[in-house]
Image (cartoon, rainbow, N blue to C red; front, side):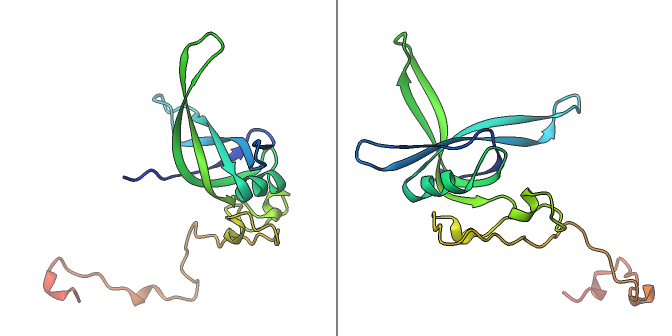
Amino acid sequence: MLNHIVIMGRLTRDPELRRTASGIAVASFTVAVDRDFGGRDGGERETDFIDCVAWRQTGEFVSKYFTKGSMIVVSGRLQIRGWTDKEGNKRRSAEVVADNVYFGESKRSSEGNSSYGGNSYGNPGNAYGNAGSSYSAPAPNYGSYSAPASAPASDFAMLEDDDAQLPF
């Protein structure tokens, strides 16, 4: 069976770090994730608010390096928890249990001083809570390609529809 989820969005509030009775760190946080498509009428895109939990070093890492509004990438599994509310009704909640957490943007991008286009994914070396380094490098921008101005247009020739001319 496979249960793997990856989400990217912004934190809706600062992560809340708590400890279990045995001292294990657990961080709770909510990620606002925009959908890739608009509504049926072509209107504004909707946003999903996804509850997440990170345990041990990953939880400490999230609590230390992420704040409200930070872009975050969470990789983990979807967990459905059953619980009983104050009135005795059985309820269910879905949450992402984080295995890995990554910076969704470089520090420069989050400060608004980036000239890299804003689609940086940070340093995945910190994914497991290795707080020894807070450096996050910007990812290359693969958004578009334009041919160099010096390339002559005559380098390309149209092929006829005959498959015999194709090299494969």
